Length: 487
Image (cartoon, rainbow, N blue to C red; front, side, top):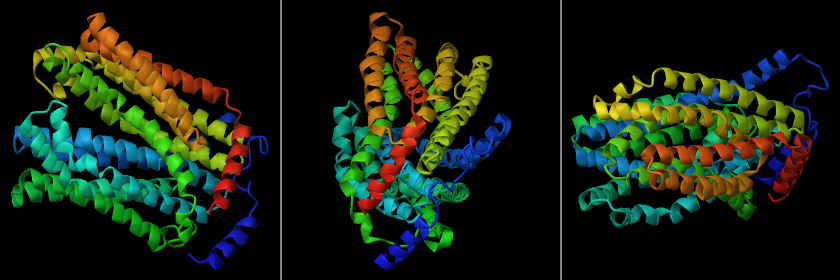
């Protein structure tokens, strides 16, 4: 983008008062119900499409495993390990790094520094592409690493081949995640849902053609996820550059190459923060697998984790919604608005969490039938259902508070909190409960919930309640000025 365009953009932006975003409640007194309804409308404008797009993306991975399962047990194991171990780690790290844009783009949009959103997204593309290149050895050498982790030779070798075919998927994350955050921060969420629906439809059709039409086996299954995910990337990119975002996308800019180190530090903090959360319950499955006679426990735990994974799409959508709303209000200098957005997001998600908590408690004897007819497994699922219910309840609050932290730019602090609560308290307590007190999977899970997740949620609650939101709004304005000066 040329400098004249920037100068023109800057002069136009300076003509707009920074706080001409929304009047604070104190400026125009409104009753609580009216304010709550108005904020809920803005929140659900982000959350609704976000739930759909996340479910669609999650479904693409599930469908991939389902098609592999119709080939052979070995193919299913290879796809499952590729998705859940290699791609799962990669997905969590890059998704976390992209959440830096929720802070920067959200605050810039609230401050009406519109052209900066496009610059921030391009910086994110550069940083995340470099990160993808650095992570390539994880894909290339996945087979020997999986063998070292205890996988059988045949599963590890086939998983290594599958992972190599998923390298295009790996690079798609570097572009799709920033595009999604860029659009969310300016409330352009409907297009994300529509493109996700298109990608899911394409994925189902291509998967069927590869497996049953062309008979390409597990390689064909792995190739479909690449194709479908790039449909998602190209669809969002086409919308962005073809006039969908006239204020925030003004073309490629050389400014994207400036300020990369500061951007990398914020992205890294975001990546570590979410990775520590993403891998916490994967460790639960790994620890359960080391119990004696663990087959039934793993089957029951897998069923519970599948239910938790589907339901988790809702609080993750609130994670995005809370992050965008808080960042928008802080960028506009409206500390009271950011506080109220936090209250609405947390209370709404908590009510939904209570509903699912009640559903799981009531139907604890029945929901396992969706996955198994084995009496021992169903009994184990019923026993674990109380822990599943409390996990769902805590997850209705914790991700929303993490979203508030992202919107406020607290990623590095939350990364330390996650490390301490999850890995210095939760995991050791789970080990003690599971092995020392011989409570098995119930003890491991209970220790990790109440020792890690509950304490982390409590700490985030205290930080959020004690937050000086007016001071945070001033910090956001200073950060925007700093980032703009680095361009």
